[in-house]
Structure formats: structure tokens, C-alpha cells
Length: 238
Image (cartoon, rainbow, N blue to C red):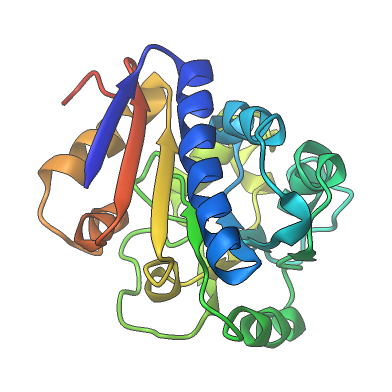
């Protein structure tokens, strides 16, 4: 585990993008291509901006999507497919794009595609309840299924409302399709971009607590190549 504390979210995004670019280009040189898994949410805005500006051979990179609300249309402002298409996919020339559609039928399809080859890099955020992807506590650390259907807890729903994606708690879907914890941990390298004061408690719990599915992000500490990037606000309780 390596921890980097930055001045602010913009600097964090730039450092994360530099690390990601260096690693992806290394994998491209070795294999001729690279595979990446990306997170979404307000905490990733600056990272995506910096990634887009990076010197990466995007036409040799295949992207996988981490999670999506169950049965939420892409036209909804909170749709992560919409988020990724507007903020990332439309701005770089990717080799291939694999979206989580938020349907039961898509789980099998995207799972099969994911298992075809190893994933090189996972950009995995940490939620206010210390979830990774939509694996809310108590997260399932046992399943080896690539993508699973999960229930969202109240803290997760509150975060989505707080970030402005939904007007009220009642508007937040009760379920989501998410990459499983096991499959996230199969990424060869993981970079977690976790800025802002609202993440400080989750960061402290992740760093200070023992590995437990009640604090899902603690599992990242067992990964052989995990870098946690924070800003001064998110690192305030360390």
C-alpha cells in the first residue's frame, strides 16, 4: 500500500493520471494493449480530466465499467453510462468499451467479456460508507462472480443525494449491478482517487481498521500494488 496526500483534488487527479499513464503505456509496450476498469462519481471529475489530457495510446486500451443502478435509463442524470460517455468515452478513442447496462441480462454478457483476459489497471474509488464500486457493507468477499446484483444501503443512497444525482432518498434505486470485490482485486494494479472532506471518515476507517466486509475498502490493503491518493481534506483524520 502506498499513500499520496495532495494539496487538492486537481493535483490528486493529475498525479493519478500520471501514474495511470505510465503503467498503461508499460502494459501496452509489453502486450500491445491494456485493459482498464474505471470508477465514476463526483470524486473522479478531476482524474478524468487529467486522464484525457495524458499521453496514452487510448486506441490500444479496452475499458470496463464498474457499476450501474439497476433498471435506471441511460437518459437519467445519475446514469453512470451517461456520466462515462459524456466525461470520458466521447473524448478519447478507446479500443473497446464495455458498459454495465443495469440489467440481469447484461450481467452474463459483461461478465463473460471481463473474464477473457486479465485487467491491468483498476481506478477504484471509495465511497462515504467505505464501499468499493457498489459493494456496500457488509460486502460479499466470497463470491467469485465477476458482476453481481446488490442492494444499496442507506448511507450509499444518502451519498448519491448529497452529490446531487437524485433529489430525494426515495428517488435512489434500491439495487445496482456491480463488479464484485473478488474481481476488483484481480486487477494487476489499483489506484484509488479519494478527495474531499466527506470521504475523511471512510479513509480513516479504511486505513486504520482491520480487514472486514463491514468496511469493504479495507480489502484493498491486501492487494500487492495499491496506491491511495488523498487530498488534505480526505486525509484530515489520519
